[in-house]
Image 1: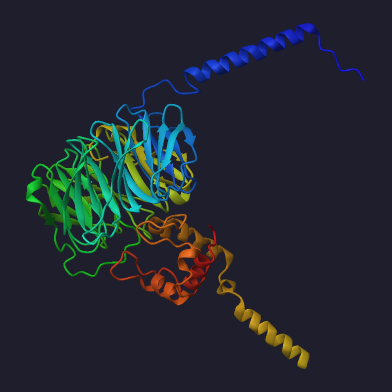
Image 2 (image 1 turned 180 degrees about the vertical axis):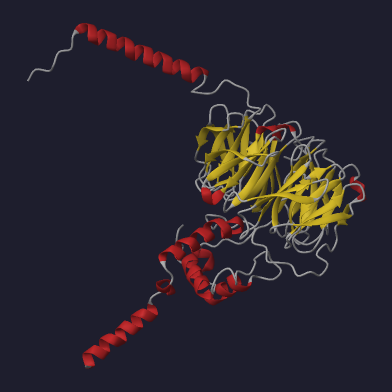
Amino acid sequence: MKLPVFPRYLIRSCRWIIFLGVFFSGFNQAVSAECLTRGTGDMGLVIERATGSLQVLDTTAKASLFRVEGLGDLSHASAVFSRDERYAYIFGRDGGLSKIDLLCGTLVKRVVQAGNSIGGAISQDGKLIAVSNYTPGGVKIFDAATLDLVADLPALDDKDNASKVVGLVDAPGQKFVYTLYDAGQIRIVDMTDTAAPVVQIYKNIGRQPYDALISSDGRYYIAGLFGEDGLALLDLWEPDKGVRRILDQYGRGKEKLPVYKMPHLEGWAMTGRHAFLPAVGQHEVLVVSNDSWKEAGRIAVHGQPVFVEAQPDGRQVWVNFAHPRNDTVQVIDTQTMKIVKTLQPGKGVLHMEFSPRGESVWVSVRDADEVHVYDTASFERIAQLPAEKPSGIFFTARAHRTGL
Amino acid sequence: MRKTSKWLFALIIMIQLTPVSAALDTARQAELLYLLKHDCGSCHGMTRKGGLGPPLLPENLRDRPPMFMENTVLDGRPGTPMPPWRGLLTEQEVRWLVEAIRRGEGL
């Protein structure tokens, strides 16, 4: 049987097409494999917790740019950004630390650095990534460029029992501050000399500190306590004065309600003279004066607060709630301390993130598989994006903020 | 007659051996598994490998009596963050959930 004969000119042009294809694909790869050429200052990401993936977002166009997969167990995931805002570092529940290129929508590198981890931070100079771990406990510090291990800091109590580490943040002076859940300690590590980290330990800060935050000026570090009413405050400008208790006994014998989701002390809901904090086991937001650190009020809210987040301008505080009241978001006016709006985005509101100057807030609605965008002045929903079981939302503006 | 009663006896035994799930409709079972994954998962991990709470994989639970687990879910563990689910879940639902956890359902 004779094979069909193609006309010669056709074969010739085919050759050209193949040649050009190969040439340009090679060219593309060398320069950027479908990478964007744009600034990243209005970009961010949303974690898709059930599928081990994330979406890279454009907060101006209010659109998704990429989906990145293969990030492991993101049951509890958070992100920090490189100071050039090109890369995101994702801390996964399974101990995975993943570096994402936001312009290319690619996973650059992934290391599984522990059995079980909870969060992380990036150093003041942007060169180190610290990860806090549940199993085996402790903090590991990596080179931000290569993800090579730089330091391994165990978190043992006086009896050499390993402790889960929570509330890890960066602090000025190339430091990281973190809290030992089981041991009830706060520690500061100075990474100025990466070969010889210096660790300072504060003991007996309270029972079961579950999370912590640092003020945006890097001065105050506050750990929330689960095992007792109150919070532990460390003034990093005066570290020798030690840790003191604030809002002691805020429950005042009131029966604590069952806590179906731990509050998160992320960011710093600090507005003028007040800081706003979630009460554990109460349907209340606590208000504390940030000079005397005395209670300045409490605001009855829809449920047990999980995130209490101030808009970047400090004018309003947004609150979401624990199961089974997690379908609602409330907005508090920080001048009158009254609730000015109650929104019901849907079941499973897990996180909220403000655009850099706060004209909009992005809300993940887990059970609806949606991210909603609200105008913070009119409270109107102005956009929504599909996302698979969305949880944490993180925008690149965090790159330039201490503690985020 | 004898034969019938034998069959009836066997049927009764079978019903008793059938997991309690028989009485929970599949929609509720799906809701419970969703709750297990997403809400229990906040502390125990969505893959049940643990977090603030201990892991809930079948191999971690072999030595735990089911009754102990049911009580833990219903009444919580004082001194730990484990809350009581009584009021949100019925005893029957908790029994089914504990069984599902023990056989690693949905993993």
